Length: 325
Image (cartoon, rainbow, N blue to C red):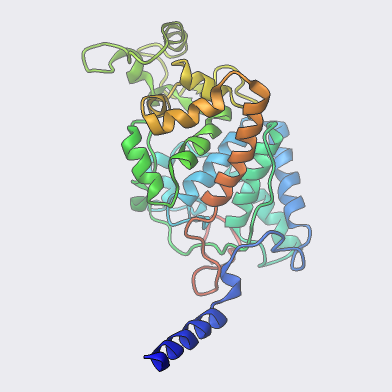
């Protein structure tokens, strides 16, 4: 028995020794192989942001949608009729040109070194920072995935999802209720189309009623922005108070019945998620801003590590982000 235990221990030691160190993401991954990588991504995002500040929300959402399908592997960037990018939940994604721009500069400087998946993760961080939100050290070392199928994007979180379904989708990726609410806080700088919430205003119960959880004054504002037979592609801010600033006002809106998307408003109707919203939305503004600024980077680092590919066997470094090598 002792001999068997000794053999088992030796086997475990061997496993630890041969476990590939490169399988772990780490900050400063490109410090030797491409020292200017993060600076180039930052300056590129800043250039595009100065032309159009709404691209910050687009890049943040692009990273989120990438990570929820096949992991954070740049699969959402691939073009093609059957690619992930063409799935219905991804049709409104934007910011691809900023990623492509950064990639072309990096390929000129350090060919075949920096992955598109890492560029996405870095660009998301820079987008938050540029909109007055927190910054953080992004662990890098991802490889780009070799699969991109629209059929695999059907399980992305939807604005129609009740909290139970949201919870299930996030838990499937190793994210808990706290992560869910914190990450949805990214909507503080987001926009959506009238198409995705107009049913709440005019036909919530299929009998012509509006969603009773919408604050009545806000309902009138939303109806003015999105007439019943108006343009469904008209864009509306998800944070009515400070759409260009990364802050906690989004959570105050959820608390007060001023959330635009049904999935966001439902966070107030569930005990577990409501307590997190309350923590961010209470009245001591400075303390709450600090709390969200501390929590959001942690949740982003956790999300951006979902099912990452870190070896040559798992993925590649694309030459173009929109095409497999």
